[in-house]
Image 1 (cartoon, rainbow, N blue to C red):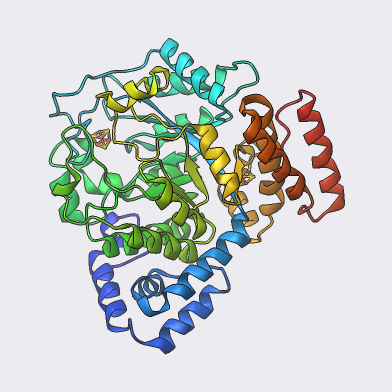
Image 2: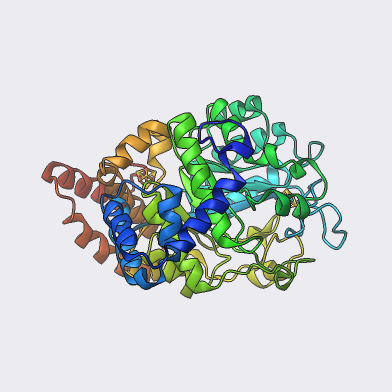
Length: 472
Ligand code: SF4
Ligand code: SF4
């Protein structure tokens, strides 16, 4: 039976409740009075429950209203800022058998690699030299090759590298579901967000796609965020791999998961990621029957933005520039840029990195970080390298409180400008710098409080004179 507060996977991600929700939404997809009442509720910008959200997803006659509202919510909570990050692959050793990932244990075509601490220092130096301040560490599940101690040592190494003016100020971590004790160790190591994708919430499909290995345990995967919260990690990132199952099912379940975290722990997910299945060694996306087209992808982003307004939405370089542009306008708040998805990929020349056989998936947006930064500015966004919240202790419910009241904007906007100025000074070419300086000048005028405006203007001058790492 459905119970949002239960700690059992089958009760908070309840199959019957999902099927009833989808049936109810389908029956009401032309009920304009009901749809309008849901849209009206959504204009309060406090989110929707999974039933209301399901109705929005099928209300095709109201698509313009849905996109318009998603844009307004994005603007209210996130303004025009887009946070940038990069993945760093530490190891592709894995004992699982996920049929959509080339790192699965049966794949003998690929080389298995694990970065040493020296390799990590070199990769992080390359990432810092691009301008990155925020990383997501990725590695397969393998207690022998990738034990928790390896991850902890690697986090310490990443934070310790300071090349020229560079620094990684926030390390997010994507590792397999583990115990509350291990999560506590990650918390103590100073990670930002703990990220774990459910892949698919549909239990029978999940079990088929994960025939062996510890990840085959559906409950372990689904209940992992509860263990993470128990271990003290209060910023968690969820997501599904679109293409594995019917997207409507995944969407409703994803929102039920968010509702569960809020109901059981008082804090919803910090981020929702939107990966779609991509080609890779031994992986043919054509073999997965639930492909999601760009139009549906954009609609999903918009509906999640409306239903969970306080949650960051992430789209990676799996997606094309065009698709990212559409998704950015309806709700995405964070993207990766200049990414390499192979183990040790940042030290390879770009052509080699594209053919490297340790990469987890094909990248569609291959542009270097500076091109991504310039493109964002040309599209009217402020590229942000901000990492302030975690470092100021604004995590979990403290973060959500500021976010729900809209006050977080008073931190995000100045921090975006100051970190962009750092980027322009340290890493940008002349053309990018020119666009950026104009943008910062114009955006400083949008800081409403004169005292804050003067302070940030002063900090921008100090950054130009060589100071670094201001934050509010
Ligand atoms: Fe291993 Fe993760 Fe790939 Fe599954 S998705 S095979 S757990 S690296
Ligand atoms: Fe993210 Fe906090 Fe920086 Fe805003 S101030 S961009 S929420 S880290």
